[in-house]
Length: 397
Image (cartoon, rainbow, N blue to C red):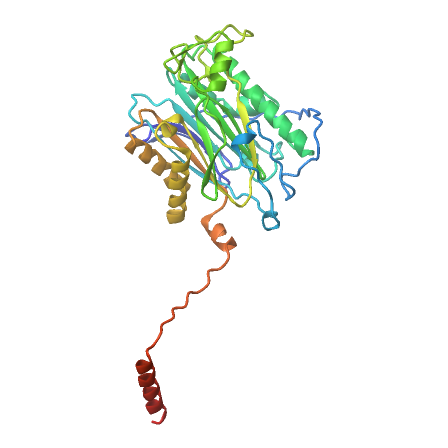
């Protein structure tokens, strides 16, 4: 039933587990180990006000590109000591399609995975979903080369001293990584020029969640059961994307970019892009959103558009929340989301990652103890007299 390729690295396993799940077949290992070469840290001086320590509790920092989508967050004394406890689960299915074009990455302990050269706030984690189109080549290439593309080639910051500088460097590195990955797809002759992929990445550094997105995958945060979109779908029909596309000479036909593509941002698709260096209606530029996590933040859902085509963000959050209360298993929650999308007759491949920020036990232990309910009843005067007579007779024996 499952058809997907996944990188998994959890805290108890410092080595990457790369697996391929073929529909209706057993699990086969893929022998494509990625090595990380040492390099020196490149610090980019960025002037920014009031640094915030991500590894220790302080006043909360929120810096969004789309601030109107995210409610204001205020830290209270009761949550100054909150530190996320990261664990995740995932599930993927080919759905009604003939081919599986989705890829995804799950790394719950990024520092251990990258090695001793990287000194990130704890915890640190990396997740990504790549939704391919025009064949699986582009998504497969990005997944296989993710460590090099996102960390090595862009001089990803290895440590942090000033938090605002670190955050700015991370954003700059990710933006560069998306653009270099796009160019790499043009240079690799094993990737068809008609193959492309959307890309959504989510990083956790201490209490900071940073999401970068190009395409129509989506990340949704659950805050006390309320769905908060951490990314914006890049579809040609949306006003901001339509305006950008048309200003660059593109057009929208029946909701499709140039009558062909249902997204306005993607990696690859070089048969639809102008020559290098020339502005193009289809771009690989990601958009960013950040959030400082508090104890009210329960989990993050990352999914390809096969989920969101048939399900609202709030529906997905409610389903996962009910599942975690029942069994506290993020893998099962991811599977439940995929099964729900199939019941809703989705027409696409399906991939979901569920990232929990605390265990069910931790949430229950931090909640105030329940008061014991006492049941009261009233007695009629006649019944009260009978009870007194019974007690008096019992006492005289």
